[in-house]
Structures are given as C-alpha cells and as structure tokens.
Amino acid sequence: MTREEFVRTVGELASHNEVLFKGCSQATISAFQEILGLKDTLALKAATGFAGGIARHGSTCGALTAGIMVIGMKYGRDNLEDYDSLMRTYAPVSKLIRQFKEEFGSMNCRDITKTDLLDFEQMKEFYISGRHDKECAVVVGKTARMVAGILYDIEQELFFDMEKAEKWWKKPC
Image 1 (cartoon, rainbow, N blue to C red):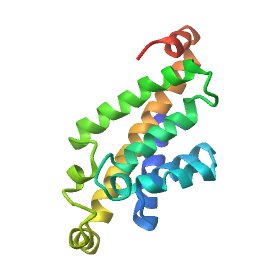
Image 2 (cartoon, one colour; image 1 turned 90 degrees about the vertical axis):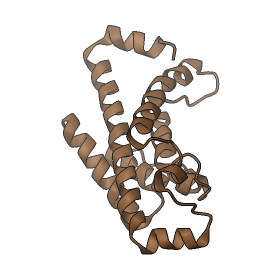
Image 3 (cartoon, rainbow, N blue to C red; image 1 turned 120 degrees about the vertical axis):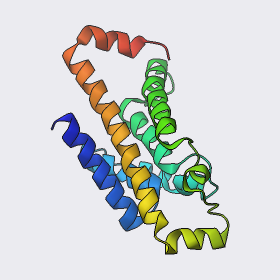
C-alpha cells in the first residue's frame, strides 16, 4: 500500500467510526487496530475516557491522545527497563503534537470545538445541530492521517536505510 493509500484509508475509517459510533479516541484507535492488525481490547477500552477532551472536560483532544497511544502501541516499550523505546517514542509523538497544533490551533477539545461539553445545553446543541458529526469527524480523520503519515515515514526510513534506523532509535528527543 502506498503512503497516500495508507493515510487516506486510515483517515476515512477513523472519520467513519466517529460519525457512526462517537468517541474520538476510540474511533481513532479502532481504525489503526483494524488496518494494522493491532487488535487489543484493553487499548480500545483504555481509550474510552479520553473522548471529549478527557470525559468531556475539554482538555487534550481524544483523537490526539489516541494517536499518541497508537504510536506507543507500535514503538513504545513493553517493559519498564526498556528506556530506549521510551526515548524513541518521544520524537514521533512530538511531531504529531506539532502537526496537530499547527492544524487546529490548540490541543484542547474545548478550543477546537468552541463548546463546553460539560454544559448540557451546549453539548445538546453541538450534537443536535450536526456540528459533532461534521467537526469531530474532520478532526479525527485529519489526526488519524497525521499519525498514519508518521508511522509510514518511520517504517520507510527504517526499511530503506539501516544506518539511519540505528541513529533514529538512539537519537535523543
């Protein structure tokens, strides 16, 4: 699959998941689980509370948090002694955060949606007006595409240049 196909496929599936099932964090995680074969019910369950900027508190966007989780699922450490994996995860996560902030102007759900999801009337208007399906699906899709591009680029870099791969794994963030 080309980079463009991979990025488009993951982005479309994540957007679709958001419109159909709601929950930006799970919509994002689920798309990557399906496309990359990273089936892990615990990760999907763990992502539940991140939607709406962490349980609708308007903090860090759930799609961004899920994207960070996907990078961790792919490159993170699986035991606490693996310090190298911890450090090598910082670079792609930092890249994602930079791209996200450039695209949306903030990492926070409340800033992006201009809605306080803890306020019942604002939340009701957000959903009934269709803004959720339009706006959040776009954020989820774009975020998933950002993550997919980062993952694809890392895999390509590592596949084609083993010397670069060695440096990448060891470079500080």
